[in-house]
Amino acid sequence: MNALGELFSLCHQVIIYFNVHKGNSETVDEHIQDWGNGDEGKGISMDIYAKMVQRDTVIIIQLYPSNSTGFLLVFHYDLEKAAEQALAVLQMNSAEIRTI
Image 1: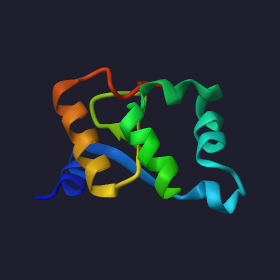
Image 2 (image 1 turned 135 degrees about the vertical axis):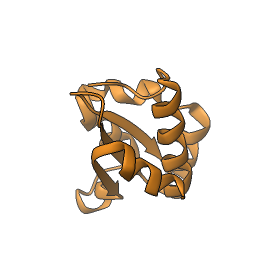
Image 3 (image 1 turned 30 degrees about the vertical axis):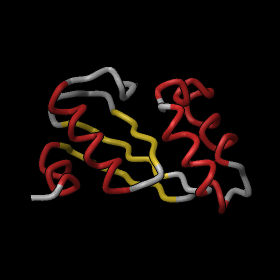
Image 4 (image 1 turned 90 degrees about the vertical axis):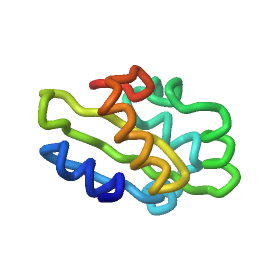
């Protein structure tokens, strides 16, 4: 099973946002700052953030894990890599993705 399929099996709900900033006429930075009063951006590595800006691409995966009442967010420029990162965090219970 691929990472996205595994996420679907481990979560009550998975929401994928793709380039919503373009429909809102926002820059990548403005869009990321809109999420959670701007503090979500602190969890994005500089390399990933730079590629998001360079490619003008924002993919956000919002996860509601089956074993939690909150949700997790992953910001990336590549859907497959975002799904793999989200799966790794769910499996390792890492702090890389902010729990809301």
